[in-house]
Image (cartoon, rainbow, N blue to C red):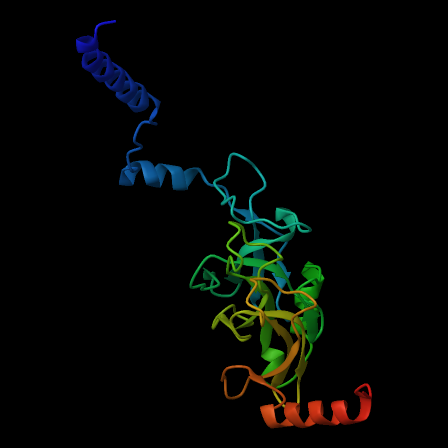
Length: 260
C-alpha cells in the first residue's frame, strides 16, 4: 500500500465508524402530547381493597392496592423482599356515606403504605387487614382515639432504586375522616414499634436512626425512645436527655465494666 493512500483510508474508517455509531443510537423518544398523556391515564385501572367502616361512622375507607398486572402503569421502583404488592397500598380513598363526598389521603410525595396495627400499638411488620383498621378506630379516648395510624415508607433511603423494607418506616396519622394526613416520626428514623398513651395524648415511638451513615438500619444502630405529643402537634422528641444518658453510661461503667 502506498503511503499517500493512508490518510484517505483513515478518513474512510472514521466515517464508517461514525455512521455505525449513529445507527446504533436509539431513536429519540418524543414527549407525549396532552391528549396522549390523558389517554394513557384513562387506561389505568384502580384496585380497591375491601371497604373499612371507620368507628361505625359515616366514613368508609378503601385501601388502594398497588397494581399487580403488567398492563397497569405502576412504578417498578416500588418493591419489597417480603411483601407482595397485594399487601401494600399507594393511597387510601375515603368516602362519606352521608354526603357522597370522597377524597384521597393528601401525600406530599409518592408513598407505600405497608401496614396498620391493631388497637393502640403496632410496628412496621404488622399485617394489614380490614378488621385492624376498624378495631383501632373503636379504641382509645380523647385525641388519641380520634386518629388512624399508618406505617408508611416514602424515601429511597439507600438509593437502590426501590422503596422497600430496607428504607425507613415512618409513622403517619390522619383523623377518622382521612384528613390532616401527616408524618409524626422523625425523618431518617426507622420506626420499630409504637403505642399511644390515651390519657396523656402522647405516642411512644421506638425509632432507630442511621447513626453510622451506612444508609441502613441494623444491629449496629441503637434504638432511641421517642415521644410525640398529639395535643401540641410538635415534632417527636427523644424521651431521655443527653445528661441522663451520660449519667446512665457512667453508672453502667462503674458497676459493670471489666476490671483491668
